Image 1 (spheres, rainbow, N blue to C red):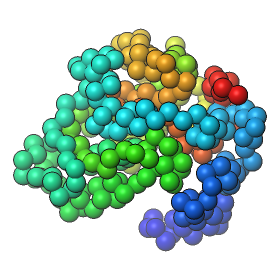
Image 2 (image 1 turned 45 degrees about the vertical axis):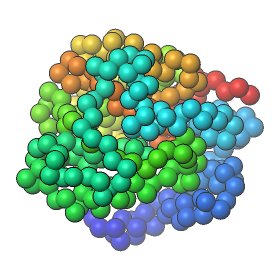
Image 3 (image 1 turned 90 degrees about the horizontal axis):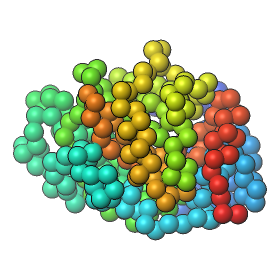
Image 4 (image 1 turned 180 degrees about the vertical axis):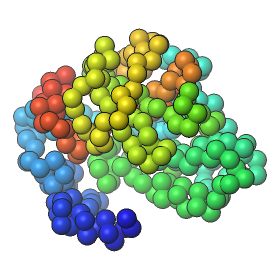
Length: 301
């Protein structure tokens, strides 16, 4: 399905989402609170209450406007966060850095190893993955990095930590788990420094992303948020308790953050820290889970 087909499908099946995409263009000139209120209504389907937020998604919007922490900028920067992680839990949990670049033009593709990944330090989730450099389309990779490098979540979704992140690039060691073809992502929701929920992201390398939510005992939860559940439910890692311990150390002293970790053949590695899961504009199914997650997010009202 090409871009035009997707737009027509969106127009006839979810017209509010198409309007939401158009609303994004006004983000730089609309007051933050008004922009978020309309955006929330278009994407979530109900008007949020800034004065008395109840749901998790509502509270994330409230935090964007009312609970500003400039120090979070370093925690969303793909380069600077590594120092934080090293100081909190140790360098052995940090994926090795191959090189850092201030611009795409600085990247010397010939010097990169046979396998690697490259990320934009100001982005969240986007990455160029190279499993075989002899098959890599360098121009396509450059074009993708240019797109990732232009993203500014402080404008398009009002996530203030990204406002002052330098637009740089980082090359890291290529990693894959025991599957031999993907890297499962374990994403821990921490509230006041304690893990309450997590989800496991699978299938991203094949373009069929699945999310499965669990509690802290690794009981599968009947919730969908953004992507459907996997056909085969992920199993509990042997060192799951250690993952929780590390996530809580990284989240210490923070009201709310999602800590992403990888588990590769029994070795745990840090992924990233996310302060606004899905930017708070993706519905929970069933809706009750939006309320349940929100009960753990205590705001300084």
